[in-house]
Length: 94
Length: 94
DNA sequence: AGAATAGGCAAGTAGCGACTTGCCTCTCAA
DNA sequence: TTGAGAGGCAAGTCGCTACTTGCCTATTCT
Image 1 (cartoon, helix red, strand yellow):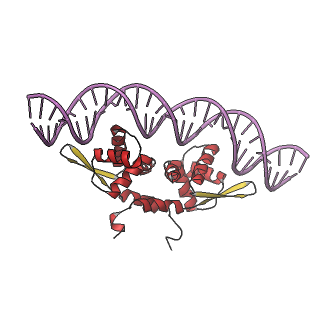
Image 2 (cartoon, chains in turn purple, green, yellow, cyan; image 1 turned 30 degrees about the vertical axis):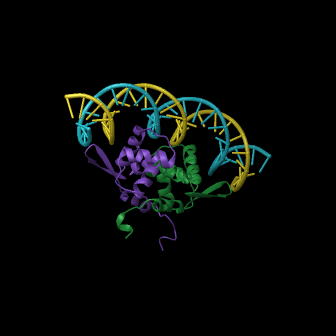
Image 3 (cartoon, rainbow over the protein chains, first blue to last red; image 1 turned 120 degrees about the vertical axis):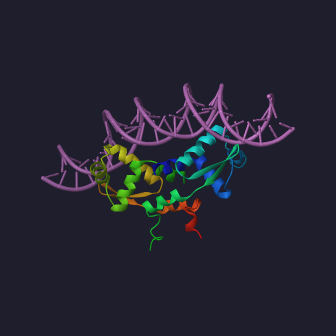
């Protein structure tokens, strides 16, 4: 469970999750070009690959090899543990 | 918003939130002794004070000076932004 | 087969974050 | 009013992590 919090504590990884939620099932290169063009952050391919590895270790991303490409899928279940551990808002649990 | 994720990315701070949710409105010394006795982590008073400062910067803890003591209160509203940004589970949003 | 595409592995560097140490301020009680 | 309790501030150390660099593997296309 600590892996989930560690994975979320990085703006690049949070942007990667945003992009996967916006359009699921993308390759590493697609995510690289999108982060560079749409968010202006000049990260190398290896850096983003390592970020995706952290997200995968946390269970927030699952991958699927398709030929020589690697498809990445968002997976939100680990996020449920956060609001189950602490009440998100007093008014949400009447 | 990045402060919330940074604040959650630490086991000591997560335990502090646990303790405040279990019993709200505690002083620094009460939290220190509780973490040491119930969780076995031998952190100094200054370390825990700095952790509470990070939680306060993130808006997850609000403080209230009462004489020479400082009362700490849990505040869960910032956590709502997490599940609002990404869907926590596919079955929760039908 | 050979070249280009898509990605992986591993070591090394730099900078941030957790923790300590030492000293200081403020409040309350005797 | 003096001492003890509760907490704050600031500098310094150490370890982790994000990123780079360089090279390697596997798949597809001509």
